[in-house]
Length: 395
Ligand code: GLA
Image (cartoon, rainbow, N blue to C red; front, side, top):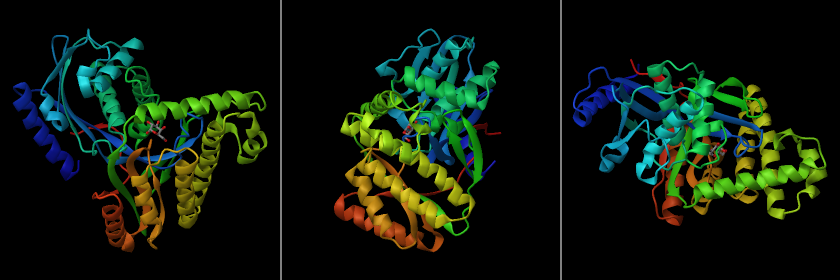
């Protein structure tokens, strides 16, 4: 247990007492957020992704109750106070605010025949900056699933926790996300990234012990509105294109197409915008496969080049970047010691991820801060991140 973990655990136990009266029998759990290195908007297209879990994430202090009540409290939304519900009210409700995530997971477990027989008191604390695109919601879903499995003895694997989290986010919270975020959180492994084939959930861990470089996440601190609807729209455009392509090639997903096959058959996709979306999905998937090969050969320069190409494609063809993140990425590309930089996650704001030589990290921060102040009038935030472990109890 790291220092931070034990410190946070003690604080949460104290907070739990203050909020819920006492902390007898309370246990503390953690599930990580994630950053994706490459393979963006490929996970709902049967393609590959390459995320890693973070050491940042979501902590939860929890205790079973003897009745059917659910009581939630978040240190990140203290102004909301205790939000009460019950196991008999597992339906989405705007007034339930963030508790729609844990409730959605309980609902999804119930749908699979795994019903909690008693309620819970749950106090949460997230260390992922809100709206940063580092998957605080997936962390919360995996955390809830992990606690339910432990408390009620449900027979599920960590992969199931990821699938249940995704299912609840899709069907309870109305965000048609792919599997990447929940999978990265549930299957995280210290010092490793996860090379996941979303077509069949086969995966391998890839050691991510960069000797001369750091992974720097830069938070633009902007989140544009209608993110979920724009995301869902991208997804349906890809689905539309897949249907059209299936009339000319025998494929199950866009991930089955090579670049050459796409170029040969792209005429089947009638709408120009859908064609560009498809181009991104196909090329990004291939870039991800090549990126892992490059990393295995220790060819970090090639890895960086593919990361940069990913940004261009997300910006121009998939159109999920935004002017603020483009400022950060453009400034990063000008720093000699920056090997690669791109927007990460769903997009429309949030963070960029960059691979930066150790000795260039300070210069990187200075240059990006200056550019961002000048062009956006805001201060970005930097996190030098490490790949962390998946969900666990903090003992
Ligand atoms: C969001 C979704 C993921 C994935 C990314 C884009 O984070 O939750 O499933 O689609 O966007 O790669």
